Image (cartoon, rainbow, N blue to C red; front, side, top):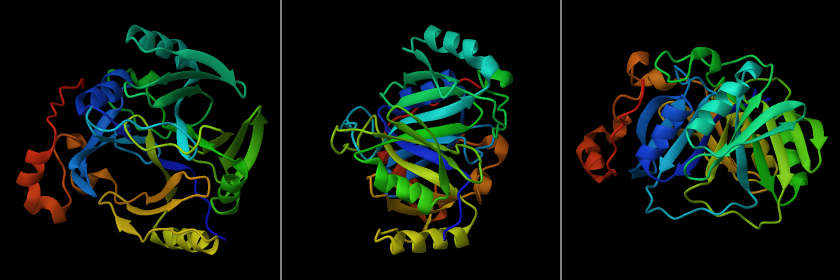
Length: 315
């Protein structure tokens, strides 16, 4: 039996223009730009990380900004439909005012007796702010344009869209240790048995056909792994189910294992260590282009190939 994950580590999506992406997540949502690096598998593409004051696991949304020349994605089965952040119930009115004054189209609704604010980022990636009485895992960021009391409190959860719930449910409950908690119409809710940041996963069915990766879609969802030993146990558990997990890959700030679950969603399992201070001090996070040691000799060529980016952000 594989260990249970406490919840989400990060969510990675594909954006368009780098500056527009950074401005929205920092200036509008108030997240800190905690790391500016490159896609290790495609060094001509940036990899941005936005999170809390220190980049705590469970607070970070990350992006490969392909620029507006990148191909558009198409939503469908095997994709993350919505990424949800936790907010304090007393912050609902603040966020309604902030988003609407920023020209963001907003829908307010209730789900499972909680207030949900639903909207999309400039590239069409669906986001939610969920007002719930839950402990915050986020370290406040003093430089945020959002007052500390109203800052995002880490992930609430994700909604995954699949063609049929059953196969994905079997992985959530049989491998990751999630338990079915509630049903609302066609939505089934699961919660990590150990409970942690982003401990909610909702499953919905769609007849939209298989989604296509591209700008405006989520690339993968990463769950938290305590260490390399847990990653090995999950690799074995997925292999026993006839799936094909990757080898353990060094991503500088964490070690990663990838596997595509039966419904088509790409899962990652990322360790909590060494974290974003592996190559930058806390005060300097996101202030420069950070490259892994094995790419430092290529810095000049990499910087010349990357799209223009001027991080003129608040804070």
